[in-house]
Length: 168
Image (cartoon, rainbow, N blue to C red; front, side, top):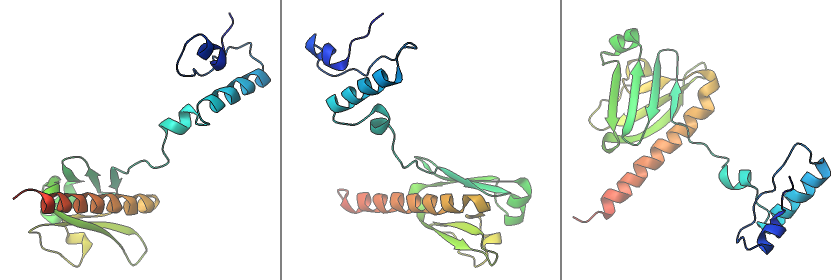
């Protein structure tokens, strides 16, 4: 079976170039030529270049006894039974975006990242161990914690702009 190149398909009336069909019998030089022809016909962007982004949003971070998840609806804190009992909170606490005032990352004396989420009407405690809206994350999650806090703050800022510009 022979496959047509992108130029041949365009000559037959196809409006957009089609990626070359690679068969097991193709030589690497023929494959490279076919891909080069396809890239020149599409402006140099490959399928992977177009469909993949370098930024994947962080939707959760976790520690040994707790986890923070962000979703379209808000922020969810899930804790172990012992951690929830120590903080006198339910195991799962859901906070709507309208009640979130922001987030920050603080570090412990040993250098571990602690994600703290500000919630309207909640008391701010100095110690993260008693704060129901704080999670000490695993060491390998420190970078993800900063990205999650950035996303939470962007969402809070966007919602503030929406409320400010909403018709009264």
